[in-house]
Length: 254
Image (cartoon, rainbow, N blue to C red):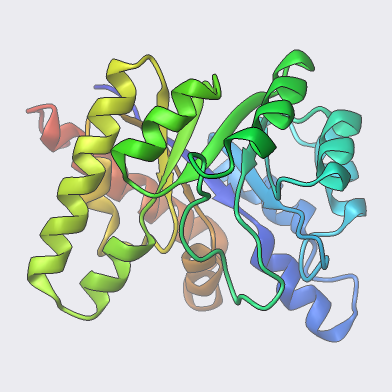
């Protein structure tokens, strides 16, 4: 089976911690639990306003976890300096607005080419695997190639919202865009990841796309952990991903 990797985003463990200004729940503990439950990597978004993950969290994650760390970051000099100091396995460049509740769509890699080019180059020179968080759009895929980014992460937010709204036609439109963009990126030699808003109900159609090699999932898993625990939530997501990938490969998980 073409195994699909799972990156667990621990941002919202930090959100709960910060709501009370307490030292718990500890994102580091969540990262270690995720590793034990079958995660292949840990994702953390250090926002400019530090609303959840903190600089201290990134320092500890960089030093103490055995899994690859994927640092989500805005395209700023401050975040570039932090990434170069900690040298995570990967850095995913995302759009960021202070007023947004969560990331709203992908970064405009085409329109921001000149701004992104030096960041991608400096991160790559430091041995950090650069990913661009983009909408499933051929123009953005081409821009990623032009920027020499080795990875793109396709934003699945619009697809997930269409599923929640039960807008069947839109669901198919967004899935088709994801499939075509993943295929286009793979043809260009770009590794394909995906994420944003994925749940047990929405993950299977995305996991079935053969070119996608990694999914990054966080908010839903932290929410499910309230009811069943983080270990169980991650294991169920891992199983759903494996089942969908096996089915797409023409195999049985039985």
